[in-house]
Length: 263
Image 1 (cartoon, rainbow, N blue to C red):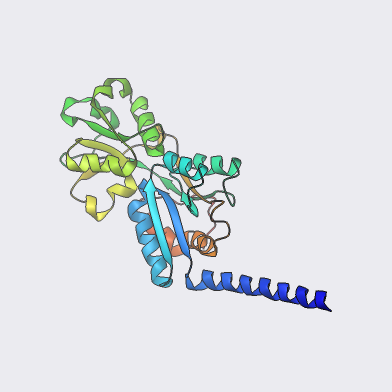
Image 2 (cartoon, one colour):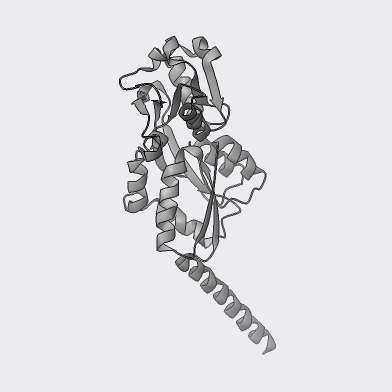
């Protein structure tokens, strides 16, 4: 009899915990910490704002940086619940290392552009950057920033990578790269289209870099080990794949991966 009572109490306790986690997911009362690639700065801020409008009690914090450095922090058990990378390699790496709480999910395809605050970039081609009038060129560090790696590929494809070495300025991430170009530390930045399309960058002009000049920037997110028990993290992951979030990403120049199911 006593064993039966204990079993019932444990069952009831488990049910109450499940119900509590369900309520957390519904009313957004839990805390969510996101690590995100810097190319998402404006787009994801808008997505989070819309999500919090629907979930007023949700506490959502976003830390932006280069995908490579954020990956290293997650490998060292930084308390991030979700990781939005600027490519798909880093989330896969975390999954392979047992640092993920689920499989990576493709959410966007990014693009690079030539942007300047002071020069008219309309119609400018990558090969044109070899001309001295374009001054210093800012790119994200290819060692740990996917957008920097794609910038290097585009410059190599144009045959001017070696020639530009003395004029290159390296940003820690793509947002800092855009800042260099915006403040005059560089005359041109090879940056994410998602940053160039934000109203705060309207003072400048840009030209698209042909997608054939660099590897596709298929971007994925992954639930981390730290976040696998966070109902709010799972709820937000579903929200990002929904119609409203996708429309926001499209507004910032991101294409939708074919593997992403329609909502």
